[in-house]
Length: 188
Image 1 (spheres, rainbow, N blue to C red):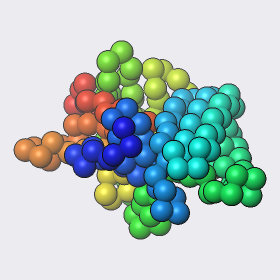
Image 2 (tube, one colour):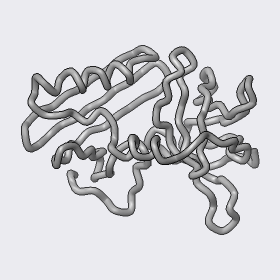
Image 3 (spheres, helix red, strand yellow):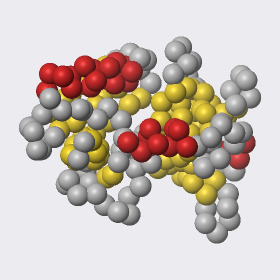
C-alpha cells in the first residue's frame, strides 16, 4: 500500500497513489494518508511508518484546510518530523502554472456515480464549481487544464484538480476533483 502506482496520477492531491492510500513525500520519507474535503468539511490523515507518527484532523468549517496546514506546521517541533500537509506537487504546480486563463470549454455537467459536478460561469463570468447543487465556488483555471478552488470568504486558493481532454476529439470530457474523476454528462 506504500508503493506508488505509476499509472495513477494524483495531480495536486498527493505525491502518489498507493493501493488505497495517498502517498506524501517529505524529507526522504514516504507518508501514507488520505484527505477528504467537501464544502464545510475537511479531513486529513498522515502516518509515517518509519517514525510511528500518526496525525488525524477533522474540521467542519470553511477555513478548516488552512487550520490543518497550520497544525501540521506547529506539530513539527513536537514530533521532530515535518508532517506533509500537502503534496510537494501542489507547491510546484502552483508556482509553475503561470497566470490564470479563461477556460470556457470546461463548462458543463460532470458525474461520478450519484455525485453531480456543475461548472458554470459565476457572477463575474469566471468558472464556478457546484457539487450536487451546493453553493458554487470560484474556479481558477490554468492553461495546463489544472484548476484551483477559491474560498470566497478568505480569497485563499486550494488545489482543486484538473480537466482532461478526450485524446481522439480534443474536447474536455472529464474532470478530476477531490480524488475523483467525473465524466462529462452533457455538451456544456
